[in-house]
Image 1 (cartoon, rainbow, N blue to C red):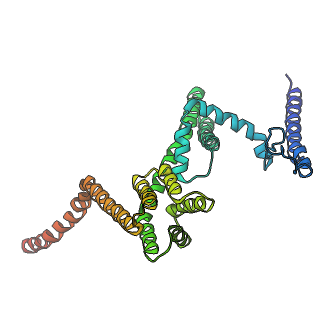
Image 2 (cartoon, rainbow, N blue to C red; image 1 turned 30 degrees about the horizontal axis):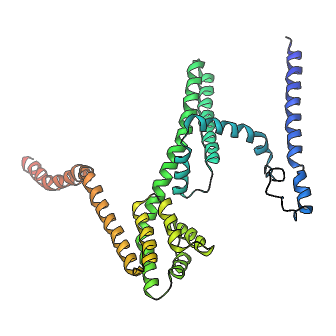
Image 3 (tube, helix red, strand yellow; image 1 turned 180 degrees about the vertical axis):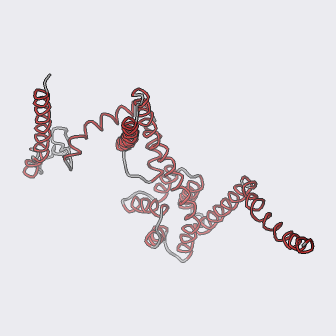
Length: 312
């Protein structure tokens, strides 16, 4: 094949690809028929309840429109291989991330593609600098793809742990504020509203959702039962269950909140003691390798200097 023929073939392929992209962009920019007709048939009872009239949101950009189907297919493949959709959904809720399992799978695919691109760039640079094994480079790229997908899952677990640590740090203060507001004569809903408006954090966001459920007609006890079921922390679950039981049986709510805050502080104190006991050897490292040599140096250096002066 001559160079001119190869160039013409490549030009035809490039022109075809550009035409496909342009046609897809024009299709995305065109307003859907359902969107144009829906304002005129909004009063019909079946509109919005049957699949024939359900409007699907259009992609927000050409990039999503072009690569979206490929990413969704890859995310479905990752879901079939890894599974565990219920575990992922549970961790997304505990991490406070407002995303579906499918969106999380798409993020995993993107992380894997980023790792694959980094490994491929390294392989290309290594190939340019000297001879390299193409099969080994391809294997490294595939391993990087898998590690990128798994790294997003590990990062989600780390996000869950970070959020739970923040909740435990905020919990005693929030519980004490609720106890003070209830002891001052406010109702549980008013006390919850006051604390939510004057605090910020992960626990406050959970209590905001509880307050929203209460204002939409859910009983206070049922709303806190939902919080206890969705929380992954035993202390927060006991807190929510204690409030629910206090609301149902008429137990003094301020005493329950004070007891809950005291329990959390005691649990934090025990955890700190346990961490210190586990890291006792590491705590001795600066003493043995930093403080002790300096002390010995200060103790023996004057004697060394004195002996040197006497020998001279």
